[in-house]
Length: 137
Image (cartoon, rainbow, N blue to C red; front, side, top):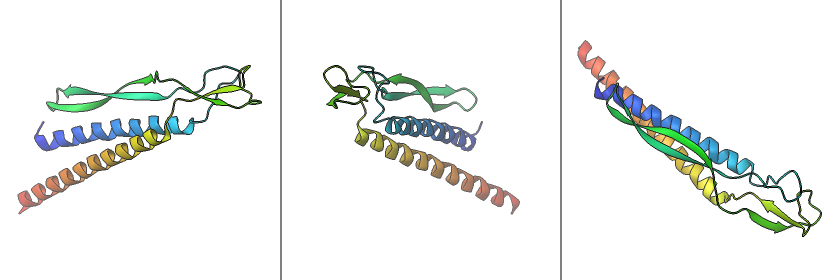
């Protein structure tokens, strides 16, 4: 596979990986206030993702792959809310271990990286078009 074709493969893998990153951060944000269903039950647990480098044997390029999704082991937030359906006998409710600023930053960085990969594909397409135009002349 030539270098230009490999560029499409590499950028495509980046687009997919970043879209997964944005999806996971969005799930975390959507569940930032999701408590357990019963008193003392654990709430939604933040998900974290990993990326892996993988050699694509066809193109000879290193691709980024969406790795495992794991649960964050950081402690849950505890707030005093007597009368809440998920409150324990002391009136404390466990809330998800989600920091909204971290999730929003993750979405922003994922979006920027996604956009950068889209730009790489657009530039590679321009190079292909220019090469074809030169060959026609």
